[in-house]
Amino acid sequence: MRSRSEMTYELLSLASGVVGGALAGAVFTRLWRAVSGADEVPEPTELDRRIRDVLVVGALQGAVFGLVKAALSRVTAQGYRQFTGHDFKR
Image 1 (tube, one colour):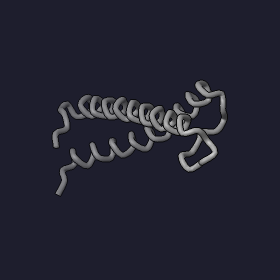
Image 2 (cartoon, rainbow, N blue to C red; image 1 turned 180 degrees about the vertical axis):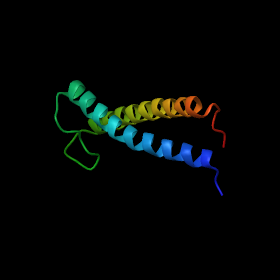
Image 3 (tube, one colour; image 1 turned 60 degrees about the vertical axis):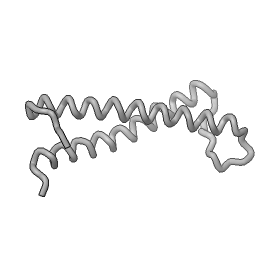
Image 4 (cartoon, rainbow, N blue to C red; image 1 turned 45 degrees about the vertical axis):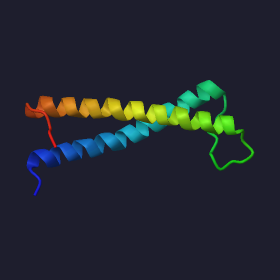
C-alpha cells in the first residue's frame, strides 16, 4: 500500500504531466509557425511532404516536449519539497 506522501506526489506528477502536454503542444505549434511560416504541421503519413520537413518536425517536437517535461518535473519536485519539507524518494 502506498503512503499518503507517495499518492500526493503521484497526483502532482499526473497533473503536471497533463498541463505539460498541453503547454508543450501550444509552444510547439507557435514555434513551428514562426520557423516555417505554415499554419499546419506536416504529419509523417503525408507522403506529399518532403521527408526533411517531417524529420525536422519530429526533432523539434521531441525537443520541445522533452524540455517542457523536464522543466515541469523539476518544478513539481521543488513544490513538493517546499510543501512537505522533504524530497520524494522512490
